[in-house]
Length: 74
Image 1 (tube, rainbow, N blue to C red):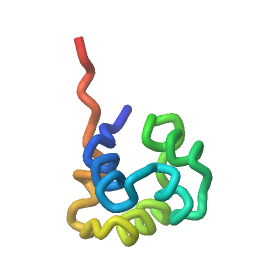
Image 2 (image 1 turned 45 degrees about the horizontal axis):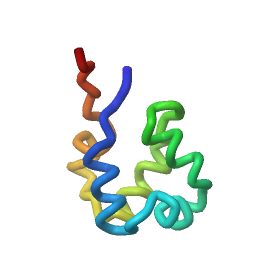
Image 3 (image 1 turned 30 degrees about the vertical axis):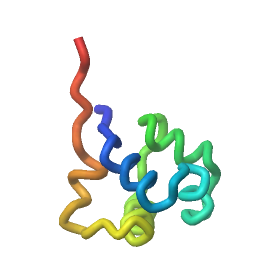
Image 4 (image 1 turned 135 degrees about the vertical axis):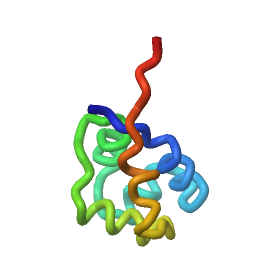
């Protein structure tokens, strides 16, 4: 199952301007963030918590940012 991280990408752009700056704040490589946003690697709970803290995402909004199922395009 693949997830749509469009809203998360938007929030990263809004708060950090680039994925690289967000990756630095998370303490991981830009490749790691890219892999997560492209459904190659799953987010851990700890990473989601840290991302929410950095991006000012309320815990009630976690499903919107991390668990929206990607709709298959025809």
